[in-house]
Image (cartoon, rainbow, N blue to C red; front, side, top):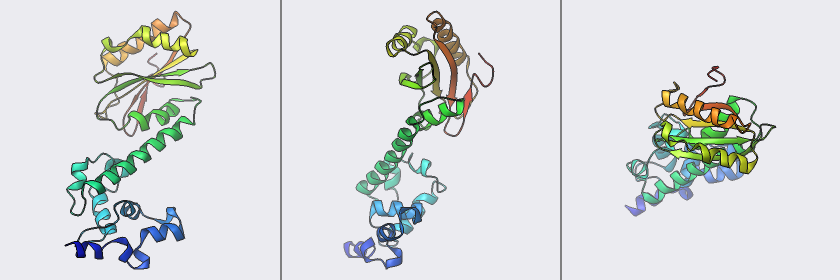
Amino acid sequence: MAGNNASFSIKNWSQDDQPREKLLFKGKTTLSDAELVAILIGSGNKDESAVALCKRILASVDNNLSELGKLSIEQLMAFKGVGEAKAVSIAAALELGRRRRGEEALEKKRIISSLSVFELMQPIIGELQHEEFWIIYLNNSNKVIQKNQLSKGGITGTIVDVRLVLKSALRVGATGLILVHNHPSGTLRPSEADKQITTKLKHAAQSLDIKVLDHIIITEISYFSFADENLF
């Protein structure tokens, strides 16, 4: 069995089928998603090459890298030829990609629209399977000073610690706040609890001359803005 597996390792492929060499000599952008994942796992199984195996894995998620990143270690290991080490390599690489997206979004520090909030926060909470509520603190130029997770789990009016939010706002010198949370269900319709939280924080912040500029609900692919929908 080991000999058969060895025959399908990248080093024994023909030159045209070696992703590592292709990356080195032709550049990383010339590789397909399957070829890039094949570099991570190094070898396939006795019946198929690493590239063929990776094409099959990608086909199972409609060739969507975001969906691939959601597969568990156990789900990846269900594919013949993918052991724990290979599954961990795939999961780690995709997590690095997700974090890179988050860092790139942080470079866009000035909030100019609801879309810029979505671009900042989607990599962080857009693909989670649970709800998280965040506060973005802005200065008077609408530049992000800080962003904090306020709660994790279900959203209810009782989880909002107004004093903590405003204490943080004063500490960092914020003049504006944007409320952000995700809906793992994919629905963009705000709940009554969402509306109550918005009203509660807006009124509390007014006494300190701090404006709540928007409340954004984020899903994996889209968002809902209270400000854009004139719900303020």
